[in-house]
Length: 250
Image 1 (tube, rainbow, N blue to C red):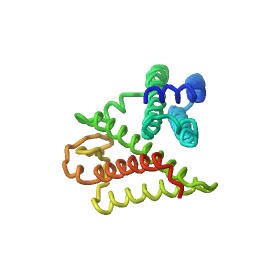
Image 2: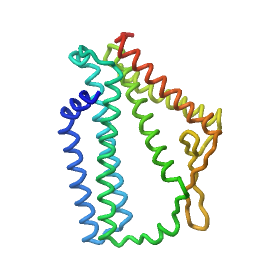
Image 3: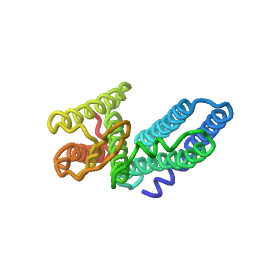
């Protein structure tokens, strides 16, 4: 799988690196212009978040297109490799792109705050993270991003199992239909509205203008939304494995 990842990276590196370079230039130009011309920090931060979000979406689409091209590639089909390795390399590639964007943001944020007039004392005083909450939030983000990626790849695989021009719409309908079903089961059957990751729930509480994030160890969540997402994720993997193995034409 590492060899496949290297191959996909070589084929996609120009698009990925050019997107990251444009992101760095635009974020630097926005920050420098905002500081020198005394723009409102909220406006600069909003545009910065939009830029990072747009870059992440574009790179994610790029990774999904790479997976789609691999499915259609006749030469890739002839390789004596397990079909799930194609999905695994795409998941790893999407995570590499996400980590690169996070690294750029991690460098950008302290530099901008050091030269801007942002008052961090208000944030430090009114926003608090309880013990373990940051760790569980990171786990929740990792889980959510990974399961979302797998669901998108499964939808692409379903769409490519049909041999006609409008098959893309079948994949789109499959994706939104399954997501709606997962959301319905989580909210109606288990009635859980808080963010959860396995045994852990993430909650936010507001008191007199301050906001605190906490993470609680609650076994009831294990029998709720997490198991539903896990079951559907495993189902997606089995579905992709079956379709990529059999090359079914429906």
